[in-house]
Length: 348
Ligand code: NAD
Ligand code: ZN
Ligand code: ZN
Image (cartoon, rainbow, N blue to C red; front, top):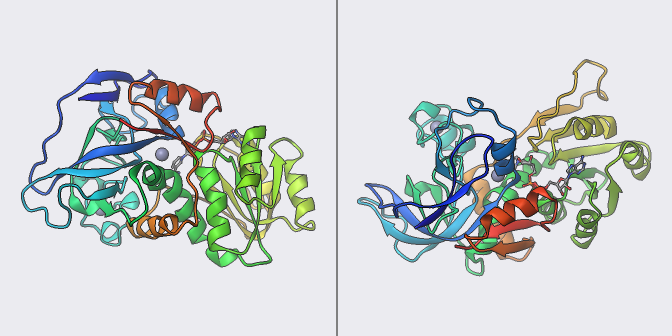
């Protein structure tokens, strides 16, 4: 079968021929219906130095996957051939305290996991291929009726990651609150819809692309602000001088982290999700009082179950453009050039 593989750090991926996987005991092979192209893959191709992540090359890209069960190994009982499934992406040990709660994104025994701090497409073979080997049946979530794999694939990361970040700030999202979404791409366009669907807060979208701000307005942002040196002032003006209660940064550059803390309301949450690698000095006075500056990584399996329900009930629209597997390199070029609206999804 064909697969889009990363063969080294700071290189572009290659389309190569690899053997179709067969499931061992407890394992499942999924026929891929959709595999999303995440900006994190661009960081792997361009920004990460060897040794930053404890992963061996080569591996097949694609960590946002959904499809149909193709074959199951001995002992698998919860899924059967033909079932439509989403793949929960962070693959932990399955046994530690966090994994037992379904938070394999924060596995506490990574040495016993299939790969350290990763999963399919992040250190192990992912879904940008015709088939994906999933190491354990617990990592599959059945698709609710009405949700197809092309729609579900981006939900497993571009949806789940913002859902997790928003969910932990729910107590701060009252009808008098403001949530700021910085970066309205794959993750951000879902984030602002998720704020709208699950809270009564006002939403301000921030991006430096005109098309992204138009998309944000279409998906219900109350205000759209251009990402420049005046953005913090604009957010203050829109909030009666108070600042925003929750800021979700889907870029993570120095400028956007600075924006978050400058535009935060005392007691607010500034959550860094993007991994552009920006850093800023921290001190007692570098942000308003009692602002929590935090990072989040991916989300939990129970949150993915909730999110799939939300999408199946039509409360969340996944904006996507599909590409064939042969065209996957072009999908990443388009993502790099800021030409993708929402998510690029590879359909093998
Ligand atoms: P994307 O390319 O689809 O979207 C990024 C958006 O940010 C684009 O709309 C772009 O125009 C905008 N942007 C860029 N610079 C900006 C700036 N200075 N101000 C405002 N907007 C700006 O990317 P994506 O796939 O949505 O991923 C977003 C980030 O989140 C990436 O860094 C990715 O690696 C990271 N990520 C983190 C996690 C996690 O668990 N923490 C999970 C997935 C992705
Ligand atoms: Zn990702
Ligand atoms: Zn674990």
